[in-house]
Image: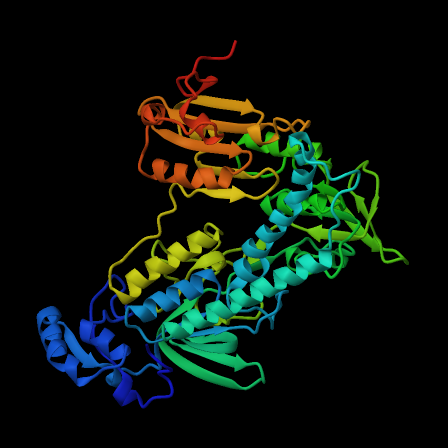
Length: 549
């Protein structure tokens, strides 16, 4: 295993490389030979004979030079230690590149000076959110258990918000440490502080103590992620975002969640499950804009049936703080004010290109109107030596997508095999309660694409709550292209939908047809079997569908 390369004399530590003409010409990194990888892991005399043969057999006339002859401190320098940045950096290092990475010091709440290895997903996103989703789900299960013979008297088990948040914090701090060790074990030189691009091949690192030092790199990778955004109405700063919501020291008794996206419906379910009086307000008729219409309708119904007050077609106008610390929110139009203990903004996220300032405009990296880094199909920016992956590019802001982009970066830049991230048929989930999972087209997207589709739907009471004495339906949907019989969209709302959809996603990626779904023997009794037993279409839609009378 490689120890810190920076501390060694460069003439002794730089492995041999083969400079290749990849897609981006001179800006592409060398592809490293077998002897280079041997050197990275600790070169010894026993590799010498093999290395000379390796270079001779693989160079094929390409320029051969030692790394000591190169003019940069690093092959790759990454700004950002979240999912995409860490994956790209450690895999690039494992492939033979010399990699440096800078990330802000750890804090559960992000800021211009605080962040942490693991990024949003690990520290203040997917992981802690899912832990709270699990925790809040027990409330419903305790109630459901009565129908299955369990008797816990007239009171529910007691809940401690403080114990949960403490346990959650311990877990994310553990994961934060693991990310640091992953980088160490893969030979990535990590820096704690902020990074700013000062040239096509230079990054200025400002350490925690304020000292500045500039490092040079053949290629710079931008992976600083994104952050929560909220409208600047009067009193907006009295509200919190998901960052603070996951680190609240005490549980609010009354909460207003503003927004209709996946973060909003997830946190509405979390607070409601823990017993807070919860309201969700959003501007549209239904939550989850961009999802299938019937999924959106089902989620809105489930929010209300579980006790959340739902305020559609609502836009906040002002937040005022009262003498007792509570907050009163007023809205546009003829909507009554409401008073709560916390207002949580869940109104979207923006790329982290200006907090702290990355210096991108000054070096010629193009940003779009939302501040996202503009990249091509290979994640290359308008400056050939600078690439970007993850939420900072605002392509598809999901952790597994950032991982995929990081792997494609490694293939393109380090291995010299130009690789485009594949965004088609990516499965995703929303961990509201019950959760949503989906892959492929929505019904409207299929119609807009000019397809004629058969729509298969099923609505039923999951066996898990059959004896629970409450009404909550699962919903499942298949969208099938009539011309090819391919299943082009699959959607589900119900228990375990994310676990089910991961397997369905493989089938859709492989181009599965409705006939193949029908030929699959179901697992009984399960909700999942419904996907392979739906025989009669609910309706036909699209360009060749019968006209409605």
